[in-house]
Image (cartoon, rainbow, N blue to C red; front, side):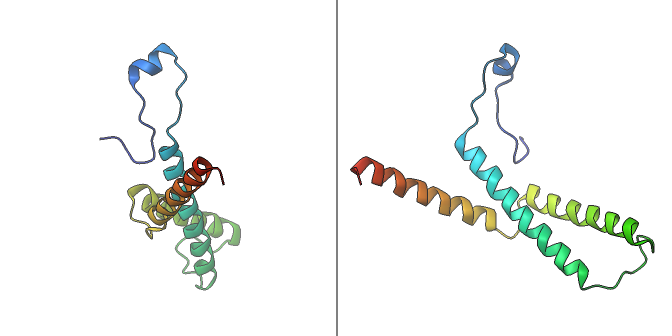
Length: 111
């Protein structure tokens, strides 16, 4: 099984040193997941500001904020990589593909 987000490339092609052309669908999925992760990260940071420090990560301001950031980022990365985010990435991909199809139809019709 290939992990999500990794491009599927033939090992023989890599060994020969051939130029690998990324699949546009892979790029679209990666961009959608990155955007979803960015929004999740911003939300986690905003939520973190509303909570009083528990002392779990120490009392030093900079040390605590670094550990909290790393923990939040790990949670976001895990959610996005496993596909258990908000579902925003799937909606973005669907929207972008509809936009691409309508753009292609307009280009084909000469508008």
